[in-house]
Image (cartoon, rainbow, N blue to C red; front, side, top):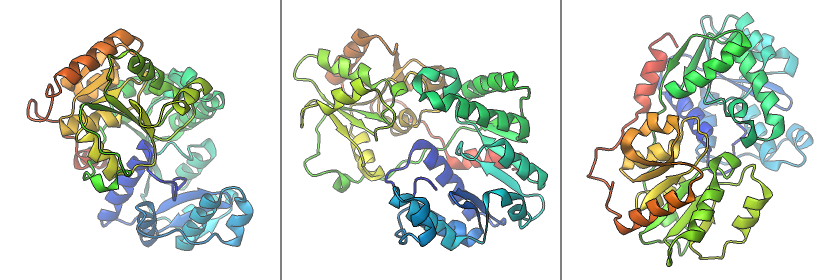
Length: 388
């Protein structure tokens, strides 16, 4: 909901979208809960279908109504998004009226939360009191495991969310055994480890669309991609340091992703990049445009210091594109020997690996090893076969 009208989706957004599409493809009764600034909205199947059209940009957001304009004076996009949601709602309630809204749901309803949002003790308790079974996907516990990589106010907020899940969830979905181990260690500290399963995400590969690339952006190999939100844990400074040390002429590095929470020094370095230079920051690309670059890239670079699942390396490995990655247990679990693993602080090793890959660009290219295949059908079979 918070992403409506705001451009390319994040990793978690894509998971929520996959779940919405899957549940719309099934015949079972379907409802969605949306929390807005004014309270709660309940959508039925037709409302969920309308929401999908909006998320896929197949329909424009309507003009903001009066309530939304009053509640979101400084955020016109959010105002229009909440207006669209209200127009499709089956019922609505004030923030204190969630229990009344839940009485409209049929017996034996299962609530799925796969986006780390609305995980409050009060909200999950209301769902349980209404007789719903609660299933929550925990992507990772990075705010607790690595507080140095998140905003200071994020840590306590996330701890409260995880405590609510520990106390109320009937089942937790983990994406890897690595994240399950870390999350259940946190649950143990909170006093309860809910029943769980591990179900890796599917990988959606967009159709390459070279026509969607910005004018003049048609690189020839060797060139490298780094995909993902620009934030501290992604370790972009390492790549900037590496490119300063590469032999000239250096291959092109495209840093593709929106700016999130990042330190001022990194942003200053990115702002100082020369236009058309060997390192280029690009944001706002469509999935098809990113796929057009990734399918021809010399390699994907993933220097992140912490990951929950790590979709970009999986997407590259699914195409047979070489991956050079920081040596993280979760990346080894998801793509195995499909990557060259390096320490996240060893500039020399990264320089050496990129020089070698640029000199022998066919190493690890399609046809040398079978690509990884992770299907959403397998994910949902695992999740729904256990009573979901």
